[in-house]
Picture 1 (cartoon, helix red, strand yellow):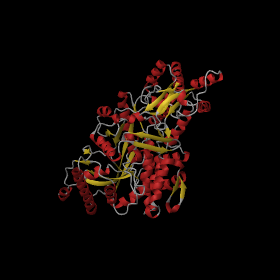
Picture 2 (cartoon, one colour):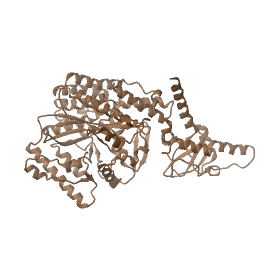
Picture 3 (cartoon, one colour):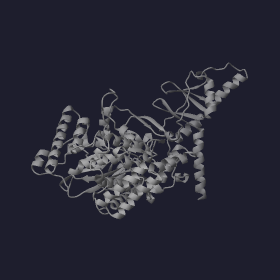
Picture 4 (cartoon, helix red, strand yellow):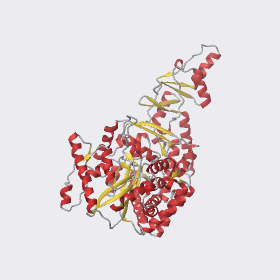
Length: 640
């Protein structure tokens, strides 16, 4: 949503006034549809490219405002967080070499920003979720300092409170609590727009809904978040949860999240979507409206429908209807918000070509998709593809069932080719981009697959943080080379060349897979944990995960040694031997601070505590792993 003058309504009167404008806009659009105001002579496509800004250590770099000033290019604009940017592409007529032209335009923008960001010792990355993003990066300090972003955060906080629980289950499980809606800023996407004639809107929109799952299955590119392997397209789950304003309440009541796939097929008009959004979702933002739509239309002027656009920007449909005005003529668009950013621009344009071709090619095969496919199946296909990518089993038309690979290669790609040919797209473009989809699908290497396989391989020999850094560095190298992701080799240890331990935070290398005991547990349990798990320190916590003590292997040995030599009676509980109130450190402290504490205090373990709760520990072993990698790098640098 680009409107800068938005705010949270400060009174009932402001909400009511904005709602009146919103209802007027809906009526005005109804009249415009009925009277044929909309452009139908030209069909255009467009796109928005979101970017991750990173520093020399492959971590998020919150420099968007400074970078924008140096770029001095109105096509670049802000996103929610200061470590993201977006570039808006000029619309192109949907014909000829528009696809390769769009790729060229994006590459030109990327080259410009890559060259410019060198002044800040940084770079840009294309990823649905940047693997190296940390919880500390989501601090409210990194909110882009513009009124509309503060208004969005305030509005969401007002409806749901100021604590956010994130729960995502994949190969690993992520369970975290946040105090800011900046979670949404983890996501970066590649939004594709297709202009649609009003008479075709219902059919095209329903087709867009039907194909969302299959086109996403081969496009997934965000499997890692905070070092956890989650959904193949974790953006979907993350976006749903980060701006979900619903409260836990009566389990029998129907309630829709503001991030939504939708609830049913469209039947008659685009108006059904806007009407449903007004009916289901409260107005959370308002704006100073200065247009009298009825007077403007009476004079033959095209209104901007600002109230409608503001409200539409607060309901996040994965296929979003859009109203716009170009050269004095209104038009309608479908915005595909499903695709992640990356892995390369070529991959992105291939995804766009697949989607656009299907929207133009499926109407001959399925004039009314709603008669062949149940809406709930389309919806479930979408979420299944988000979780599983190319491993998805789809329920398709006429109750048929397909693997993702068979559905894409045997059924959908031929239809997409026909659709692009029908609209006059250059044959070279068609072959070039749809071949990327076919080859990627056949070899089953999506961006997500590449990331997870690289991470799994690297994690066997280096720390989690080092593995994530190598993945991001390798990803950026490959993006600059430009070959699509299905041709990439896995990330290597040498891709950690920019890794700098002095910049690391405790949260990036602490051990989080903890084995703990409580005060009343017996010493024998501690001894067994040390033996079974080959650990040297066991934290002691209470029922609320508050740290209350620490037991070391040395303490246990000393206790048993005293018993063996008859120097005392056996202690029965952890409470008798533990260190009370051990020295701790915050997860956002630096490694150097942790080293200084452990050295000065002559201790071998630092429990990591946040909000009075134990979340990890760091030990000498963590430092040994990091030091080993650093020494290898210094050795290689010296030889080079």
